[in-house]
Amino acid sequence: MARSGDTDVEFNPRFFETVLRQPKVEQLTDAAAERALSNMKANAPVDTAEYRDGLHIEHRESRFRRVTRVVGDDEKTLLIESKQGVMARGLKAAKG
Picture 1: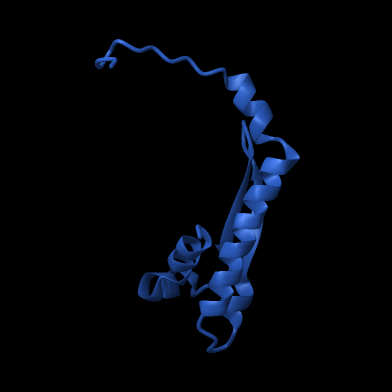
Picture 2: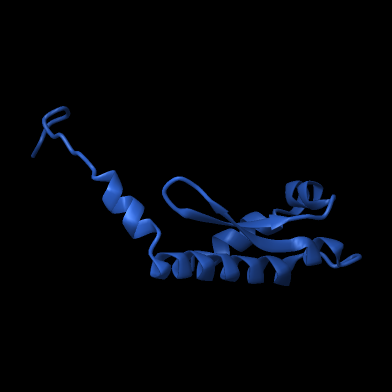
């Protein structure tokens, strides 16, 4: 058994940069975001439906990968999330 400080690990950043930009990886992240969005919309309060309709997926390119996010555009998103945790529960349920 290696003791603390006895093992040295070096990662190849180019390998991960290549792998994380593969279409299959992007499909997996998009599928997870779609599951989360579906759960969030199913459990969202529907007073005026603005909160539910404001939930959507956004993509952002970072240095090593494309990032997929589920975001809310309604002005009440932070208030509703702080009181009810709709997005947090939807994300947790999407883990399966």
